[in-house]
Image 1 (cartoon, rainbow, N blue to C red):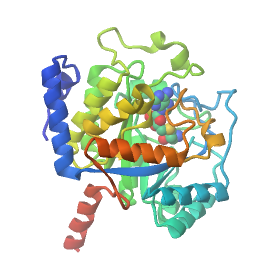
Image 2 (cartoon, helix red, strand yellow):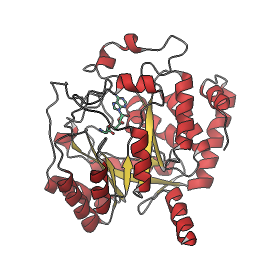
Image 3 (cartoon, protein in one colour):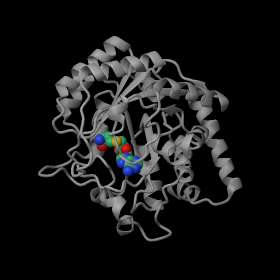
Length: 359
Ligand code: SAH
């Protein structure tokens, strides 16, 4: 749907409940038409919390002294992937901090084992990496890559996401374009309500989702971590009152709904952050207002405790099987069906069909 920036902005700031009801209905209808009733399930494995970056919002930032750092070994990661398969999840998402010492050839080997032994799709979310590394991981069979651009406001981005010490970060937008040329399914997204984010910034984020032609779009509320600069002194970084976007379930749902309108066939998760802030109600609302994916956490529990990008993350202590059963029940209760298979992006499928007709 062609929404102009002003339309997006006025929906984001709408305070008439009846009109908002119409937005929720429209987003849900577009979701049903474009991607159907399935909720695709992805098993999330947080395989390392080591990070060399200094992002002002994230509890895993390198200077956080009180994080006990871990890297899962090959056996543990493959065991988690096999658990994903047993639970019926068609995708394994491997996420980590931006670990400078991560051996990408080792990871490529792990990816190829997961592909061979489970048949699941593999999604990577490991931060900014060199072109050769992304090529090697794709060759090993990685199917998808998630890299949020975090905010479309370049000044705010530079403030909250400083370059690595002694180096230069990768331009995330350029990396997203590269991922597309390497034939990954490409995902990105933003946090809602990061201190310093204005309504106009957020509206531009949604326009950017459209421009980048994303396959997957992750949107969650910002949750302060007391051990980070933004968590310690939010006031110092906030936009003027009235301009600052609040980090709420409601605004997150508006962004999800509008994202569904501008990118109808994309896969949009009801994120862990929206579930942390709004509990299972937050998750359900997200699914009813545009989302069609959930990423249950299947990281071994001792490691999961240490993957503290923000405090009290949802699913921190859940047993994977119990969580799966409750989730399936919630999905059915709202008249949806659990997805089977990999749940690939419909955009990617249509790109493939177009390129095979052209050749
Ligand atoms: N190191 C990887 C993965 C980061 S975790 C990378 O940089 O891509 C995935 C996402 O969690 C981040 O992109 C960010 O948008 C989100 N996140 C980090 N800290 C957060 C916080 N305090 N509140 C909410 N979301 C946060």
